[in-house]
Image 1 (tube, helix red, strand yellow):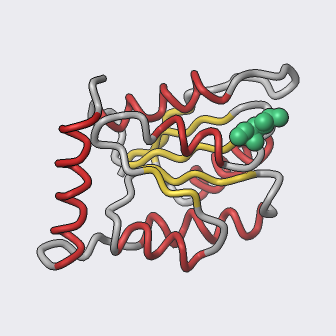
Image 2 (tube, protein in one colour; image 1 turned 120 degrees about the horizontal axis):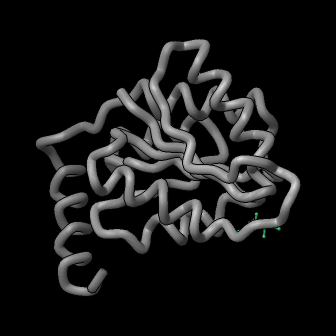
Length: 152
Ligand code: RB5
């Protein structure tokens, strides 16, 4: 499993905590930046880089972090094939995988603490999509909606 991870300045410290956690578990990752957390940067470019890495199959899942998680989740969900889920607890993370086949996890560093964030990451990465049933039908509908409405 390979992870693409990115943030803005507000998510930079939490991104570092998550990267260390991934390393400790032997999970391979690519860090799409920013490289330092001092300067205020837009979450859009970093969210786009992570979304494209997942879109292009360079990573199995993405993790994006900003202050609230809202900006990065809006950004990644502008990309065809990306199902980004903003999760504030482990239940949301589990459901995002089981029911929505989410492929990008978004979190808000100013909303949740690091311990909860790591628990959310672990829950998200541990769960599998319940394919073949009603959830598959709905995810397929999302794909069809995307084909009708997205032109990027
Ligand atoms: C940065 O101040 C903040 O606006 C950003 O991290 C994020 O919360 C936006 O959605």
